[in-house]
Picture (cartoon, rainbow, N blue to C red):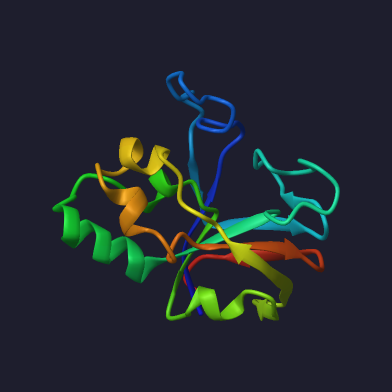
Length: 152
């Protein structure tokens, strides 16, 4: 599995905003990030979100992003619009649900699909939520401290 991007954001743009416009917290595309076991990613909105949280980190497939860009004719949006932390290439993330896996020495437990929501239509393109069903990414728990880097 190759890591193409690591995204962190200090605040929630969509969670808790149903019926209201999204917030405008920046999404930072970082070259490396420190992951903390059972807690989340340093600097990210989900760090210490709640005990035993299933989405301490989220993964998203680059291949799904490319497919959606082609399907909807989108050329002006980065994969950060999906609000997932780690953009991977070369891995079937759905196959990791319910399993432990390792990336660059950091161990994870894949907990469930990171299901798409109605905000995907706003953030990416109308119809994106439906197109992402079954391919919304992976939520995972972090099992040991470590650092992830892009390009590796």
